[in-house]
Structures are given as C-alpha cells and as structure tokens.
Image (cartoon, rainbow, N blue to C red; front, top):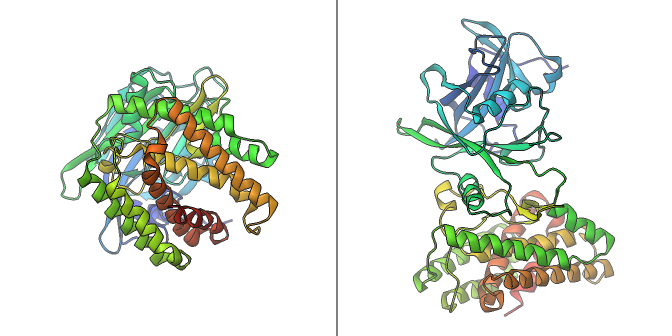
Length: 470
C-alpha cells in the first residue's frame, strides 16, 4: 500500500496531486509555486464548520517556471478520522498547526461536499475562509438537498468536473465545476440561461450557478463563475454513441442528422435574436483569412505530412477575403461536435456545454463568431464517427469506402436540416465552410500527431479531400 503523503503546508500537499489531474492545463510541466488566492468555506447540515468534517473550496494559482499563473478550483474535505468509503479519494494528511492531523480528500467524491454544494445552490451559507473572498449564488429554481442523494462524478472530462446528483430521483441535476478559472462570465452559464429564458427546450433546464471572487495578478479582486447546475437528462444518450452504433450496424444516419441540423439551426437563430451580432464586413473577413492562414503555417510546422497541401490550404483560406453575402457573426456554441449533444426520448436533440473552446480566453468566447464554425465542427465529427472503426485500412477497402459514404450522407442531411429550419443556406457559404472544415481537419492532424498518431489517417484523408476541392 502506498504511504500517505504528509505535509505541513497545503501547497506541498496539493502540488504533486494537482499536476496529475486530467483538468490540469499544463500537463508535463513542473510547478514553480502554488498560491492560495481565494476560498469558500461551505457548511454541511447547518454545521458551523467545527465538526468532524470541514468542506473548503480552495482557489489556487499554479505558477509555472516562466511566471505564468493559472487559477484552479479545488474543493477539499478535511476529516479527523478516516472514512473507508472514501479511500480512493484521499489526497494525504495535512499536519495543521492548531488542529493536528487532518485527512484531506478530493471533495467532489465526498458526500459532505456534494450536500453542502447543493445546499449553497438552495440559498445556503458560504463563508470566506481565512479572510479570503467569498461567493455569491444565482438561483433560478429552488432545490432541496437530497438527504442521502447519491452522487456520481463523471469520468473522462478534460477541463471540468461534473457531478450527477440523485440521478434516479424526481429532479436529478448535474453540477459542473469549472476547474480552470478566469475572470468574467462563463458562456456555459450565460448562453444556456439566455436560451432557457427565451423558452428554448434544446438545452437542459438551468437550476442555478455559483459565483466567486479571488485575488487577481495585481492583488485586486476579480470574479467569475465557479459552477453551473442544470437538469440531468435521465434516459438520454449522447449523439456520438448513437452515431457510432449506426455505423457499426451499417445503418444510415440521414434522418437523425437532418433532425440534428434542425435543432442546431433553431439554437443559432434564437442566439442571433437574443445576443449581440456583428456584420461580416470586408475588414473582418480579411482578419479571419489572416488568422486561418496563420493556422495553416502552424499546422504544417508541426505535421510534415501536411506540407504537400500547404499551398492549396492557403488559397482556400485566402478565398475567405472575397466572400460575398457572408452571414453576420453571432454567439455560437464554440466547441460543437457529437459529444456535445444528447438525444432524449421526449425532447429529441438537446445541446450541451456552451463553454466554448477551453484554450481560448474567456472574454473571447462570448464574442460573436461565424455559426458556420459550429457546422464545420459537427460535419468533422460525423467523419470521426464513421472512420474511427476503420483506421489503418487501405483507402479502397470496402469498409473504409462505406464509412466515407456514411459520413458524406450524414453531412448532407445535416446541412439540409439546417437550411430547412431557416439557417443560412450553406450552399451560399461554400467557400467559408470549406475553409473552416479544412482548418478544423488540419487542427485535428496536429492533435492526432501529438496524442493519437494511429488516428492521423482520419484528418489527413479529410485534408486531402478538402484541399483538392476548389
């Protein structure tokens, strides 16, 4: 059995654990320092925080060797005695100067934290720990903390942690904790609450959100969203699994893809009505083309196999400058693919996770963008669903040929559904869509080269196809 890590300073205890978490943004790099910049003391069951369990949300700034700081949200629970049911969540032993040895647990796996968190959403108490900043709560719907409500932490998330609370109960909900914190409003909260307020049933019903404040780089206070809660869509299935099952069974996905196109257009149209838009003028299109061309050079520099397509890709991006009648820029999903959509037996397609691209600064994610970027993300996702099971097969293998046909049919049905529901007709935006799909495929080539080299054939085939179209 591995010996528990003991530390007299919280940074010493948390640092090694933090760098091993999936949501740690600077994987493979060592920490130069770890500073507490904020904290929330939560109260479970009406206690005053002096009982056997203390629930504390740490807001910590991880300092890299170059001085860059990234703020993380780290909920912890402190117990005086071990809880055998939480052995897998134990981080170590904190040797507190006043309270002696305290066992420290990853809070998201501790029912005490979950209970206190739901209580906070219901108007419960949160104090500022050790003179640090506290938090505010926005509640859209009163929720009673389930007395023994079971909670499940979703596995596999890269940048956040989501907890399903009382999945089998009458009002199940899912709470997303934003792990990497940035000042400002998180689009996941802003966009979904705006859509729900407008009567849209293509997003889960919001429950509430938690806001907090912490010390910024200059010492002054900054604030942002810490968590967002919404209904849990029990009985639903993510679109990636639905699509992959159709591929494996040799079944067409055209009807489902058409419906997904309709749902996507409905959300885009409502976002254009309720949030700011911006005309796609020549200056903006030139800026977009410059950015796309810079991304081509970046991708080719990292993936030598892309070099033969550089000139064709640069020409495709340059064509964006002269596009006529480009649709207005508007709020978009920002990271749209099959894994961001659920199929509900009662509601049909439901869109999730409007947080946008996790690597982009938060302020940029609420800036108007081309809705076509979402469309390109989804059409590329169809290709992945079709091709991932035939990776490595020759291009003329019947199974790979069938997969390519499946993807193209799904793409066509999706675009038709989008246009049928009133979305901007993509035939009028062929140059723009081609550039964005090519940009996405080249980004995928970089990702696969760095993370899954055996899958590189998927985006490379798309690059070949898109670069050859003109």
